[in-house]
Length: 249
Image 1: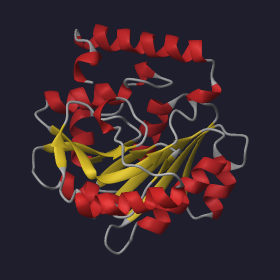
Image 2 (image 1 turned 90 degrees about the vertical axis):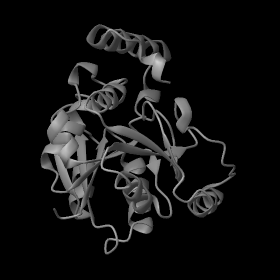
Image 3 (image 1 turned 180 degrees about the horizontal axis):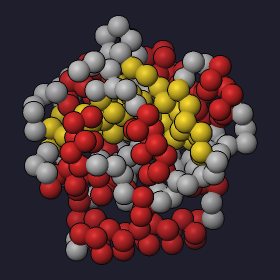
């Protein structure tokens, strides 16, 4: 295999977030050490995202409308060339050693299926209190964590989809994200559950600290509507698997 990581970033009218995310990837990822490609999946944006992506030399998959996060990720994975696939929210800022650290964790054992970092904003155990007061402080804290928590991998029951890395071989075995959860919420829980059903372990990497703005797309929606969507998708998960995803938080 080629050893390349395909970084798939779905986005919808979030050009400034996307620009910051891509800049951080380029600043903190050595293509000689960890080769990568960036695939932007644009969900029908009207803010110039496709044009900017092409100007930047990125692969851009354009959809006519916003069909949600799971479908966008699936479109991106179909277009990917890498041995490794990484799903990344457009409101995530990566940091020193991030991809190297995630790949080391993923390749630490043949039974590891999916890995993810820790962050300042997430549901469940991936949210940590690594203190910082500015983005400069954040990058300092992330660099410190990369050294302090070296190989600090912890088994975990579920990973949040803001930043998830897995092998193409896993994708080929368990398939795509389940689009019944569109526009989003619980498609990541579902993917992790399916990986575990196939005998794969999940790891949380305490040495990889990324900044997550948090629910950037859904913040534009009404809070009551978001809560309704979350509850609807939780019920869809329960109906599919006969288990409450809250058991894995």
